[in-house]
Amino acid sequence: MSQTDTLIHLFAGGCGGTVGAILTCPLEVVKTRLQSSSIRLYISEVHLSSINGASLARVAPPGPLHCLKLILQREGPRSLFRGLGPNIVGVAPSRAIYFAAYSTAKENLNGVLEPDSTQVHMVSAGMAGFTAITATNPIWLIKTRLQLDARNRGERRMNTLECIRRVYQMDGLRGFYRGMSASYAGISETVIHFVIYERIKHKLLENKTHTSMEEEDESVKGTSEFVGMMLAAATSKTCATTIAYPHEVIRTRLREEGSKYRSFFHTLLTVPKEEGYRALYRGLITHLFRQIPNTAITMFTYEVVVYLLGC
Image (tube, rainbow, N blue to C red; front, side, top):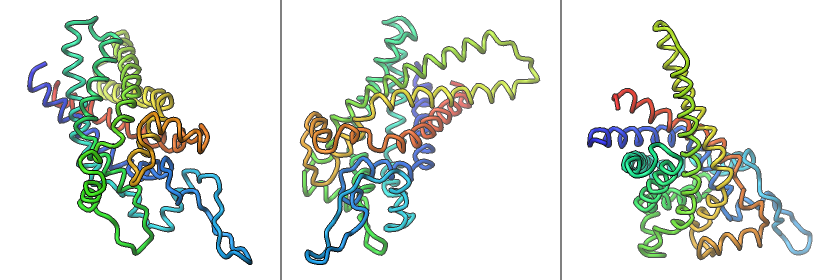
């Protein structure tokens, strides 16, 4: 792959990630709140007893709509875009690094293994995920902390610089890499996603070569190709996310301020013990509603930019 091709994939990946992050930010905030162990999500009402005064009743965690309602009522619409700044700052380099590493790894592995085989796609996706996670974990930690910073209307909100200072004061440089082990475990999701995506994409391209379309239908042909890529991305991501979702909850718990969770496996054992196994899938529906359009938008933008730039 030439240097120009690498830069094109770098730019296309950055564009795709940025567009997807902006359009799906509110769902990201709701998902993170549902994954959190924050007591704010468990307390729905205050019961007044005649003798002991106020007492809090712990009830089942709210669903996505209830969580959204609580955020809007207590914090206002602006809270649905908490963490968007770090997200925009981080998503472009993260996606750019990922897609560039994926394309480069696939190009190199095609000369060693069977070209465009499942093994090539799996190893390429894994290497790309590891590279992007290692480089950008501090940005995502700050984003998560900001999204979990639930404050009522009128209260001063913590900004990005304050959050960075707070993390450093409490945990030092190591604090910026909390949750990275869970992110590494999440590479499995990325691998599954790209293997399925590349397979569907390959089938679509095969079908295109066997389907003759007249020249005057060129615009329809182009539209159907891009719609096909979006559906391929959505399908593959749904399968991968459902299988690997618990790492998302574990990562959020590890990134919480003052988290009692020490490591990936400690969290994996503690959460089901204290809250039941269903807690490992808390926020899954919201995650899917966000991830499917986000992934489809990202991949669609990526493919369009690569196509327009003639790579």
